[in-house]
Length: 414
Image (cartoon, rainbow, N blue to C red; front, side, top):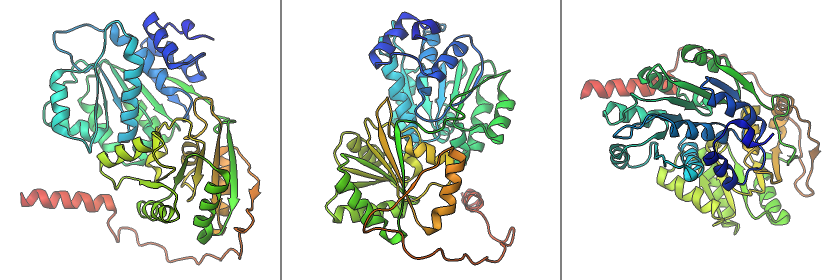
């Protein structure tokens, strides 16, 4: 199948040629015609399958035909769970839109950046807004966002929205949008929460599932190396030097671990930076930009980088800490082997992670041979886990409840 058979105009076919795409991916083949017909859509598609173009191309084409007004108002809204993904989607839309006969204006509305500048950009008008839910609601409360003529809503990585605790913000956004619109929902997994959300605001959506039985790419060489927890740092340094990867993305489980590991790599003479939610947005943009420009060798990141971050020709991903779920595993390793390139994904497995990684393998439909690197062999035995006391339900407030209580307290003071 060719892109020309999907109903795209010459403007969009030119955008496809400029992007270097030869044939449409499965998700593009199925989604683009449905979107052009104006249907609501639920797409289950894992990372690296070409889903951004699957909604960006038809959306740009449809906005070309939208009614022109004296002042530009937002006609399409794309919601993303993280700032980095939102910025990447904005760049993609601008890239695909370069060949349009009638140029469209795209802006990003994300936290961590100057809100006054975003307000000024909104006053100048925009056809497409790419936003994170929190910043969008902030701008709505300031009465500077005009969504009254919204035609298309795209929610990207909706399962991650729920993982990050944005369900309330997402519901609040949906309440303020005009009811007569086209809805496009993209998710790596279709959970009960995703289904419930779809039932509440979508109209007879078409369901498209891609790669359900083949979640990992054949272009990724996946490796599982057994190593003691205390030996992971030395092993990582050994592999970086012996394998001679030009760049490596290393995933850890916490902000603190990212900072510590990056510092230790620097002490060993390996250029490294930490990338996590503890940085300001300006710092995150700078670090990611420097890494993409190949300004340093190792990016040590929390799962903030697992979804939506497209790093050109990244040769290797290392799971220094194992991810919490099989879905996180797929998204992490999907940072390599993109755009037809090959890549390597390595997971470090200690005694405490053996059972968990077996579960990841089962859910991801893979089975990897266990490796042992000379000088870094897994030693000792699995320590039996002592069963702790059952938690007392309701004894302690959750972090979210504490935050809400603090907000209420501050509100009463003011």
